[in-house]
Image (cartoon, rainbow, N blue to C red):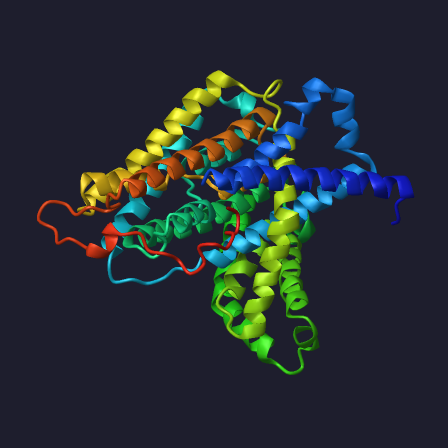
Length: 456
């Protein structure tokens, strides 16, 4: 269980280099008012085979090995960073009810989710995409990943962009975030189904599914569809009240001694529960975030902020930096495929959202702004890529394209919205005949505008 002194020094050096690269990249992008996650990934890209590997391949392999003691420790940091990122994302997935915008939210949710997902399934089925499948994947799982990649919107990235622009309290932001919350929840449900079916089809099951020893793909589909939905429903029903009650209980010694430790135990136990059920632990991390987000009390809120700072200062930047290290734009990047995939994904997603907004009665400029904002894939798109690649459902080339799609689409959304706000234009100008909402013409300053968002 212990490491040699030289191995400890190697691990500390690798972690230090990754942290410096990630935070430096994030700082530079923040100064440019761009999503910090992009800078963190690019910091890792410089240390990976794309840049350092081309300039000094032996040094790159020594500094960041994929095996041995250092490789295993970095892998553990990567997995913990992923779980904490998904947990913090879950804390933001709290639907807020507003009287305004309900019609637009409904139309955009249906049109902006169903149409892109269906189009992605159709393209993956019609096009020759077999070379994108990983060792544990299949045409079905690839089609689902393809559909999710086209349809997903990032809650953390787009909320950070709107926070920086001072419009987080506007009607525009409420509509975007309400729709994105629904999309992100469905993303993780479908991802749990895909991963479960993939490991069942490969015969490499774990937890309850492995104990059942069922060798039937249709039953696997039923199991890995029903179990995540039941788990999500039960936890959303009982979880928030149970967590709030436990935080106030006098017999909860762990909460009294360290609220942060109690919160981490909740996250890890729900991840372990998912593993016991045979579904991916990231689903447990998401549900843990959704269950603990509404708890009140000074100590509870302080522990959440402490966990956020620790995660965003250490584990999550290392996760994003390692994502960048994994990108190999020299040997595992198909520019032609990425070009048509990127254009189709952005056009289909944007047009679907625009169509839903117009059907809801929004003006053309308002529908266009909503379409561009909801094209940002950010953190969830990167999680989708890294988890699917880690489970060997997709190959390295598709992983690279998915990460680049998330990066560039987020960059586009930030630039577009920043340009609109900088010119003093309303993000949701009314359609002809509609009353003018004066509050939508001025940016609103968020009280947390200086805080760092969950996944930037």
